[in-house]
Amino acid sequence: MMISIITGDIINSRKVEPQLWLSSLKTELNKYGAQPSQWEIYRGDSFQLEVPVNKALEAAILIKATIKQYKPLDVRMAIGIGNKTFQNNTIKESNGSAFINSGECFEQLKKHTLAIKSPWSDFDVSMNTMIQLGNLTMDNWSPEYSKIMKTALEYPDMTQQQLASLLDKTQSTISAGLKRVGHDEVKKMITYYQNYIHTK
Image (cartoon, rainbow, N blue to C red; front, side, top):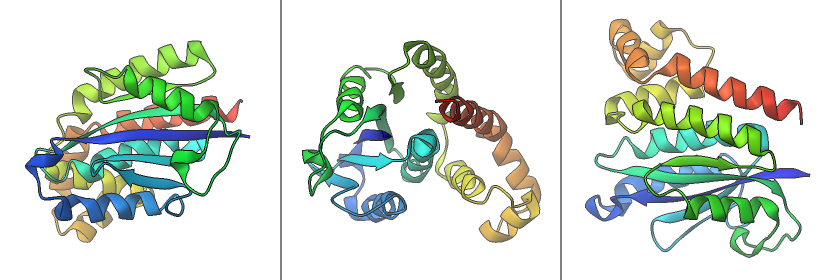
């Protein structure tokens, strides 16, 4: 069975007190499973998370929107898609091609903050091109707009007016914020990803 592994670390983690962002990160990771079998934080600011393949890109973007609420933090992540051939009590001791792809992808990130490595090389090329274009916007999300993006992704059926009520903002602020964060374009990218995974 195919799984996805997200390997990540927090950029500028020493510039913000860990208690400010760590609980938010743990809350986000907890949505996908239990610690330490499905996720683990190690070395203080690095983490690994197992998620269903169809949820991986959205999960990574939600993690980014969570962390970027704490300026000047950002997060570097690699999504590896593949199998799991060995399951241990902790995610760091499990193994398989998903883990290998995630680790290799993470090592190659360099100047990018998000990338994917899967068994399908053509998919990787097109998907990573989209992600790099998306990152031109996502890497520049402000804390306020990151919160708007995160909430809009978590409640996709809410109207702008409902989001405004939830976040105690005006509807015009939500509208401007969703445009600024590239909400529609990010949603299209997630949909493209999910549609491709659905064919596999």
